[in-house]
Length: 275
Image 1 (cartoon, rainbow, N blue to C red):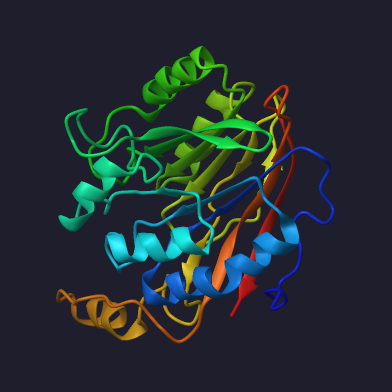
Image 2: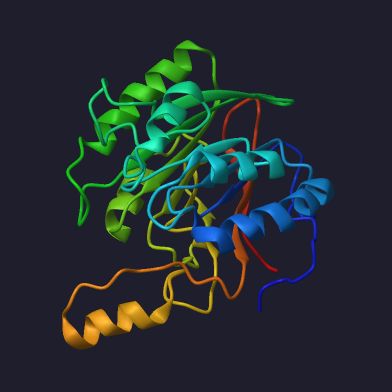
């Protein structure tokens, strides 16, 4: 059962750089959960870095107002996905805020925003990279080649701790990227499916990995959306507009600790809270 208390997600963790990541924030319920629960989580767990995937914060895409609410609650870096460019209002936000990312391999270099950033924490700099998958997804450049280039740039800046949000559908593609990154990246966490997986682990070379961290939104609907329209599409085959479910707020993600000296993941655990 989800933990309804604001507990310390790092209570059993070793010393190191504390990283807290959250899955796709879905609609007002997801934003509300971040606003109401995250400040208490930060107060009890003192993470050095908080990352959330915000690409569904307004259902399909993220508007500046939602981003501002999540940043005010304590999210330091917001990542994106296949819906990032959908609201035109997001384009200027992506250009102006280097800590709001879009998938690095999803659009040409001339498109708004960036797919990577370096965030300074009390325990040292962290490189954050946002990637999109190619399997069952919109057209994108190779996430493997894009990762290779980003690692080189981070290394040139003396960044040892690297975190990757891999926004992808296929579990095999996510696992393959984690093994490709192993020994060079601290944490690879999957997003996009809105369903948390039970495989959080540390690979042989020290890369923390989970196939999907889940979502922040209502667990009473269907992947954060109201059931009615989705059922109608399945039953009739006709297009239906999906609306975010607002009946509950739950936060799903992963807490991890990385060595500031080597970049290796020392500890990883799935976390979940409900409001």
